[in-house]
Image (cartoon, helix red, strand yellow):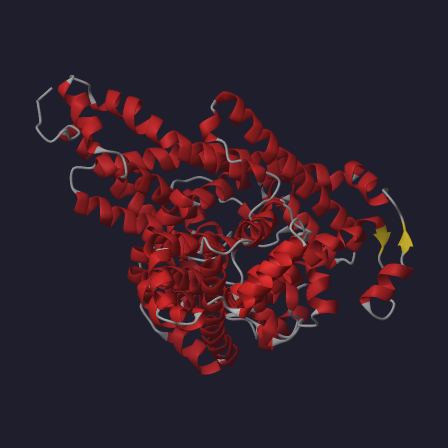
Length: 302
Length: 327
């Protein structure tokens, strides 16, 4: 074995790992490539030859179809964008405040509040009581509140934020500010917030990913299609197509034909999928950097 | 010069030296702003997490709706343990329980093995730039929602147009009705889970690895240890606390399945429920069909068993190596 000064693995092992990693990278990316290719293919060729890695008969007709008739998609898009913004900002406020309070060692009852939020990770009331609280007690089913309120508080995010505060803002800074006569809130806004910006960026990105990808709240708490988030709309496109296919199988194509006409074609479905994914891909490079940092802190300290 | 709140606290301390109310009110008065900051979170947690806990009583009643929720609750018939008995004798539930446990066991133990291996291999790569590049790609699937991934799975396994059937056909083999065959879905679902989560779970271990002091490795190299020996004797032991904690947490949730995965990827196809139904989808379908008591009973069992599992796991670890336990 050749001696290497840097204590690195052998060139042979390195090559082996690289090959495996390239292979795995392709696996990570290929499904997305297939979907994009099919979305740019001609429907007739797809029906004949099936899906492929490369577009079959390059055309943008699927996208034209979606953009022309896509009011529901646009509505879902706008709704999800607004919901993500509102939800992320509100969640940041709630979480940063709570985490800051329990990070201050001069708060006598901070242990109580920490246990208060940790216990809910161990035991939960379940789906039905949660649904009943939302529908009968809060009465937010089929309202816009249902799309962000349940997600505003997140225990993991609080723990990560608390760690950020503890390690970046020592009580001594707060002490000296208090001696200078500043009130707690002005301390928070003028001193703490600028220092904890990295933490806010991390939690903000985590939270916006959760809101952007959410379909659960639309599924459980709403029935009106105007409350469909983007992902839920994508789910419905596929689900409704399947129901119609079942109808065809069971009742014959004459009865089902009226419904079939309203269905998007295979290429259109995939075009919708691509449109749903695109914003995430643009934001991805930013996410990756803060994600890794946030997970690191959260995992090590949490 | 003592402030008025401080004087108040002192007085109440003298009068009620042992009573908590004095102490708590004191703290609130002294740290008014902090408690104000705690308020929104406390209320939200109370409404969305603690109130539902009280709702487990629904598991003992045949819930019918009479006007508002309180009236409904009081007027509904008390059925005691009926739903729990039904739970343990219903045919479908056995599938759901078995599937949940099997899938989660594979996810937890396979997941740890694969992500630790991935993290170690990535960190040992000669080119750090390449390692970062690969990791970026491995992480990407995590950002797709299960709905989007269900489209991907559809692209591959669609019976008419899917890639899988095309490949089979070009190899001269028979096309298969994927969404009708229960037997293949464990493979598909497990692959989908790892495809999405491996890059993400590796982050934690990668961070832990970079935290290991380089001097250990230098000393080991001087002593003539091979790479394998170094990994076995330095990296793995240093990762063990993290591995144990994450595994205990995961084991506590062994009865809770990833609803998104099992609901979206199989696309609700009825024929494959034998291998794709898990506890959470089972409870969801119960709720959709109005079986509130039954659904709540199922969730309650899930929570209680999960609680015992995590406590047992923690106890076992504490006996073996006290430093690694969670509590």
